[in-house]
Image (tube, rainbow, N blue to C red; front, side, top):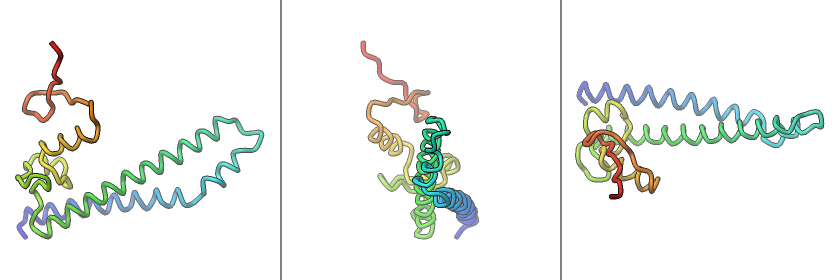
Length: 144
Protein backbone atom coordinates (compact mmCIF):
# COMPACT_ATOMS: atom_id res chain seq x y z
CA UNK A 1 0.00 0.00 0.00
CA UNK A 2 1.32 3.44 -0.87
CA UNK A 3 1.40 6.35 1.56
CA UNK A 4 -1.51 7.80 -0.42
CA UNK A 5 -3.46 4.57 0.18
CA UNK A 6 -2.66 4.76 3.89
CA UNK A 7 -3.93 8.35 3.97
CA UNK A 8 -7.17 7.31 2.25
CA UNK A 9 -7.58 4.31 4.52
CA UNK A 10 -7.10 6.46 7.64
CA UNK A 11 -9.60 9.00 6.34
CA UNK A 12 -12.20 6.33 5.53
CA UNK A 13 -11.62 4.59 8.88
CA UNK A 14 -12.10 7.88 10.75
CA UNK A 15 -15.33 8.48 8.82
CA UNK A 16 -16.47 4.92 9.59
CA UNK A 17 -15.80 5.51 13.30
CA UNK A 18 -17.68 8.84 13.25
CA UNK A 19 -20.68 7.31 11.47
CA UNK A 20 -20.70 4.23 13.71
CA UNK A 21 -20.79 6.43 16.80
CA UNK A 22 -23.58 8.54 15.32
CA UNK A 23 -25.54 5.43 14.30
CA UNK A 24 -25.18 3.86 17.73
CA UNK A 25 -26.36 7.05 19.44
CA UNK A 26 -29.40 7.27 17.18
CA UNK A 27 -30.22 3.60 17.75
CA UNK A 28 -29.93 4.02 21.50
CA UNK A 29 -32.21 7.04 21.41
CA UNK A 30 -34.82 5.28 19.32
CA UNK A 31 -34.65 2.07 21.34
CA UNK A 32 -34.74 3.90 24.67
CA UNK A 33 -38.40 4.64 24.36
CA UNK A 34 -40.83 2.93 22.06
CA UNK A 35 -43.09 5.09 19.93
CA UNK A 36 -46.17 3.62 21.58
CA UNK A 37 -45.00 4.37 25.13
CA UNK A 38 -43.87 7.89 24.27
CA UNK A 39 -47.17 8.67 22.56
CA UNK A 40 -49.18 7.10 25.40
CA UNK A 41 -47.39 9.42 27.79
CA UNK A 42 -48.29 12.41 25.64
CA UNK A 43 -51.86 11.36 24.95
CA UNK A 44 -53.21 12.44 28.34
CA UNK A 45 -55.99 15.01 28.11
CA UNK A 46 -53.80 17.77 29.52
CA UNK A 47 -51.43 17.50 26.55
CA UNK A 48 -51.91 19.64 23.48
CA UNK A 49 -52.34 17.67 20.22
CA UNK A 50 -49.37 19.47 18.73
CA UNK A 51 -47.11 17.83 21.34
CA UNK A 52 -48.11 14.41 20.02
CA UNK A 53 -47.44 15.59 16.47
CA UNK A 54 -44.07 16.99 17.50
CA UNK A 55 -43.07 13.72 19.16
CA UNK A 56 -44.14 11.75 16.09
CA UNK A 57 -42.22 14.12 13.81
CA UNK A 58 -39.08 13.86 15.96
CA UNK A 59 -39.16 10.04 15.94
CA UNK A 60 -39.67 9.95 12.16
CA UNK A 61 -36.85 12.46 11.67
CA UNK A 62 -34.52 10.41 13.87
CA UNK A 63 -35.45 7.22 12.01
CA UNK A 64 -34.80 8.89 8.67
CA UNK A 65 -31.46 10.23 9.92
CA UNK A 66 -30.54 6.74 11.13
CA UNK A 67 -31.31 5.26 7.71
CA UNK A 68 -29.18 7.94 6.03
CA UNK A 69 -26.26 7.35 8.40
CA UNK A 70 -26.48 3.59 7.82
CA UNK A 71 -26.40 4.14 4.04
CA UNK A 72 -23.33 6.40 4.38
CA UNK A 73 -21.68 3.80 6.59
CA UNK A 74 -22.32 1.14 3.93
CA UNK A 75 -20.72 3.43 1.32
CA UNK A 76 -17.62 3.84 3.50
CA UNK A 77 -17.38 0.08 4.10
CA UNK A 78 -17.60 -0.58 0.35
CA UNK A 79 -14.94 2.08 -0.30
CA UNK A 80 -12.62 0.35 2.19
CA UNK A 81 -13.27 -2.94 0.36
CA UNK A 82 -12.41 -1.29 -2.98
CA UNK A 83 -9.24 0.11 -1.42
CA UNK A 84 -8.26 -3.36 -0.19
CA UNK A 85 -8.92 -5.05 -3.54
CA UNK A 86 -7.21 -2.34 -5.57
CA UNK A 87 -10.26 -0.91 -7.33
CA UNK A 88 -10.59 2.27 -5.23
CA UNK A 89 -10.64 5.38 -7.40
CA UNK A 90 -12.20 3.57 -10.36
CA UNK A 91 -15.84 4.25 -11.23
CA UNK A 92 -17.93 1.17 -10.50
CA UNK A 93 -20.30 2.03 -13.36
CA UNK A 94 -17.95 2.76 -16.27
CA UNK A 95 -14.49 1.70 -15.08
CA UNK A 96 -12.88 5.11 -15.70
CA UNK A 97 -10.75 6.79 -13.03
CA UNK A 98 -12.53 9.06 -10.56
CA UNK A 99 -10.85 12.48 -10.38
CA UNK A 100 -8.61 13.18 -7.39
CA UNK A 101 -10.66 16.29 -6.63
CA UNK A 102 -13.86 14.26 -6.44
CA UNK A 103 -12.24 11.62 -4.22
CA UNK A 104 -10.89 14.35 -1.95
CA UNK A 105 -14.39 15.83 -1.59
CA UNK A 106 -16.23 12.49 -1.41
CA UNK A 107 -13.76 9.76 -0.45
CA UNK A 108 -16.39 7.01 -0.37
CA UNK A 109 -17.87 7.78 -3.79
CA UNK A 110 -18.08 4.83 -6.17
CA UNK A 111 -18.85 6.97 -9.23
CA UNK A 112 -17.11 9.42 -11.52
CA UNK A 113 -18.92 12.75 -11.88
CA UNK A 114 -20.66 11.73 -15.12
CA UNK A 115 -22.12 8.54 -13.67
CA UNK A 116 -23.02 10.29 -10.40
CA UNK A 117 -25.03 12.84 -12.39
CA UNK A 118 -26.69 10.07 -14.37
CA UNK A 119 -27.60 8.22 -11.16
CA UNK A 120 -28.98 11.45 -9.65
CA UNK A 121 -31.02 12.16 -12.79
CA UNK A 122 -32.46 8.65 -12.69
CA UNK A 123 -33.24 8.95 -8.97
CA UNK A 124 -34.97 12.31 -9.39
CA UNK A 125 -36.42 12.55 -12.91
CA UNK A 126 -37.33 16.05 -13.98
CA UNK A 127 -34.88 17.73 -11.61
CA UNK A 128 -32.25 19.67 -13.52
CA UNK A 129 -28.98 20.88 -12.01
CA UNK A 130 -27.59 24.32 -12.85
CA UNK A 131 -24.12 25.81 -13.00
CA UNK A 132 -21.13 26.41 -15.25
CA UNK A 133 -20.74 24.26 -18.33
CA UNK A 134 -18.16 21.58 -17.66
CA UNK A 135 -18.47 21.96 -13.88
CA UNK A 136 -20.77 18.99 -13.62
CA UNK A 137 -23.67 21.34 -13.07
CA UNK A 138 -25.21 22.25 -16.38
CA UNK A 139 -27.71 24.97 -17.24
CA UNK A 140 -31.16 23.54 -18.03
CA UNK A 141 -32.33 23.55 -21.60
CA UNK A 142 -35.00 26.17 -22.24
CA UNK A 143 -37.76 25.79 -24.79
CA UNK A 144 -37.53 28.18 -27.73
